Length: 146
Image (tube, rainbow, N blue to C red; front, top):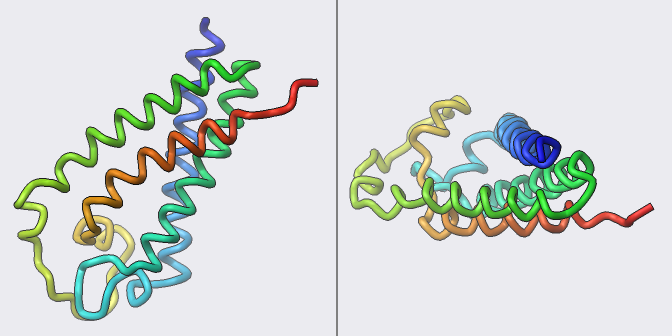
């Protein structure tokens, strides 16, 4: 039982760290001109694609780690459910009218942490991310038995 709990926690941490580091690296490489639409705080289609792919890759690795620690797939179903529920709860604020009240004009380069605070993406992205993560965990957890 403790092994399964630890596998879910470690799998979640792997996903969180890899996603964070991946986004930092991608933003450092691509910059704000690729991440945002010109003169706006709305993220570009290219950035949405990068973020979804990074999330999928991180979830696949997190699912693999979870399954390896738990020595089976059952814990990865718990991790996938956790990713899905937490992600959907965290996506709810994007439906608020206040989400659109942030500044819409962007001038010049933004640092990565400033970009995280003021960047705006469509609500569908916030709701797609948990599903991408849950599917990624389940894909990663599928391993061949010795």
